[in-house]
Image (cartoon, rainbow, N blue to C red):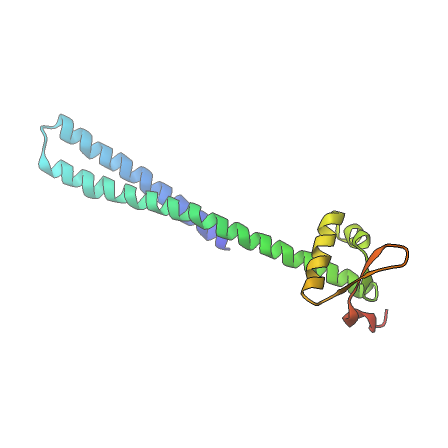
Length: 147
């Protein structure tokens, strides 16, 4: 919804900018070709310059809000990856490897390792190196659940 509101705000700002430029340009043209009437300059200022400036500031504000929305999207994706890993860990009785996570979640092995390492650093999992050298992550909360 926030993305739609930002788009609506930017559309309104563009309309305001265009309207200001057209109206202001009309008053300036009338001033230039109509005998230099002082009231035409006031019309250009209030009917053109102010709406154009308001539209331009709205466009700048909408564009500066875009990186924040992008960061929010990245955070939501990170949370979704964590949830996916937790579901896999629950379904596999609390023991997973980066390869299994990558296979079941549809992410790369490096990304799966990154998510698993992050969960281990937060204390939600522990990393074990098996005798055969494979890295396995254990989620103790899920190890006692019935399969």
